[in-house]
Length: 291
Image (cartoon, rainbow, N blue to C red; front, side, top):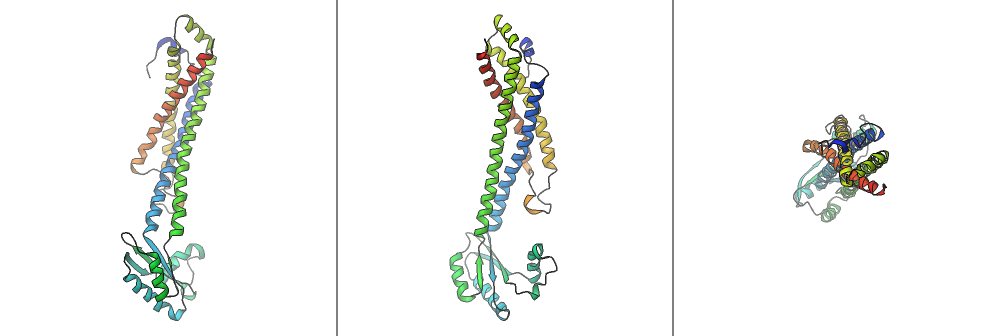
């Protein structure tokens, strides 16, 4: 592909709008594809993290009069101690509940003066516990206790993360299609600009496959070069994003992790393949239309 082929190589203009358009298009598209890939991978990790974090935990909320709070809390803990599938259960302290409410009400919230429910954190083991059976036991032992197994929170979050991952994958496909369309237009323009040279080559016996090969080689190499630069700049930009360990929650950790840093390196190769196929189809289609 990189070997020059004498006169046919001069058919494709060395400079001009088709030259920079091909490289620029490939570079920009791969730069965007790096971010789409990072979004897709990060969304996949987010879905797995939410699924794992919420599937093994539950919360019991106890809303009772102050004089019955300790009694019902102990009753709930006794029920959980004899419930199959419960690995650990503990009541949150006032300080822990204050930290949970701090993002909404501030760090100076007087928890001890407010009629807040008591929260009990439950960690399941193995296949988990029978939530419906536990609710029935709690209603009998502690009428003020309400079990929340996080099901109504977990599923929408996992579905949202899955759709983000799908959006990233679809974006990569759309970017590839847009790049193919732009390179096809550039190839058509180059072929039209060199129509007279192509006619002369045909008169001396050159076949269309021989002529098309020069365009395919040149445009593929231009796309590969532009895509390589786009991938490098894209990876540098992703490296500057906040890491997963940075405080900020939902939008952190959008970069690559571990072996994932090798994935963007495949994008320039994919761009070269797209350019090869698009240019080959465009070249033969245009050559058939030339007299």
